Length: 488
Image (cartoon, rainbow, N blue to C red; front, side, top):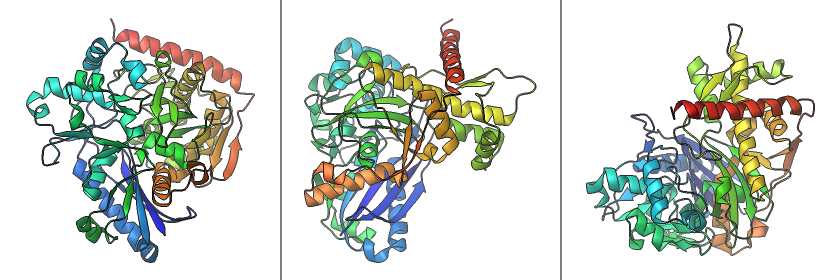
């Protein structure tokens, strides 16, 4: 028996093939574009995800044809919050509005006025990044289209619809819509009504470890798989990323640097602390929740700087920083290129370099970007600590975790050791595969969702902690100054 895990990420679809022991047999990653025609708009074509899934699975099939022929279940993961709107024939009415789209702030304020306890119900204050604010924005700005909506769903669930014909989501992805009653693990009729939708326009709910549907014969023939194999509920990438590194028990946690950044701590009960701007969401495994600091700007500011510098060799730039690294950069960088959630809930926040002079080098600017993201993670950690979600040795994964230098900087800024795991780059795709293993076999969550082997522990540099504390204080003042320029 082999298992497929599919992760519909923000920049690419990743597919992996594993055996019953979760050994990686093949993998593929196929990029898909983000459309940003005007400032603050971030959209993707839903059918582009389907094309990317087909291409990724074709690569996996070519790499391991015999193992691919033994696939017994499929698991799904995907970018959270992205709003997909379908008509009565289950065809997209428009492009999906992504999690990092800045529209909807005014509508979020209106939702809060309509449902004053929305944060207690949904685990976080109303934010434009979540699906509810996007749907409310559509109701106001595209009313004709809004009136034709038959179904709203999330990114991975559009892939599920194509695979199975079922309109289903799991608890963790539903949690990120801000239309979900986190404690009861069901849709909140009050919030759904405030958005202007009806419960029948929302997907059926399952746990991530449940079977959500079976592979359609027509799709199976196209993919070279067996018709009728189960497709698990899966999860939003926050939940599946946690499951992928065994973060399912209270106090286990990790931070991940992908396009965005997340700092996640698992728990066995719903304990919202909305005043800290920490997200408290249902996990993709039954009877579990997680608290999360959500950063809109993870590794993406570094990719942005490389583009601005006209540099394609990021490793060379990081090596240049590491060569003489021994102190914080004299330059400070605000990484808020697409606004920010934790701890600011500020979709209009913007980035900045501070402290430039004639002697500033590109290496100092690259280092400043690494440190700016680390300062943001420290802000998120302080929020989690205030919410009682303290993790002493967080795991470290995502594309940014591949840089040992960045890990060292982050560990020092956080003043906590970071654990790097072997195979952690499989991330949410492995978590999706794990959901499929449980759905297929009935195995227990704790037996399947184990922590990978530890590769190394990155310790904070005690000699640099005081200097980074000083820089952190300046970083926070700079954000307040940047915000003030927009309020004048």
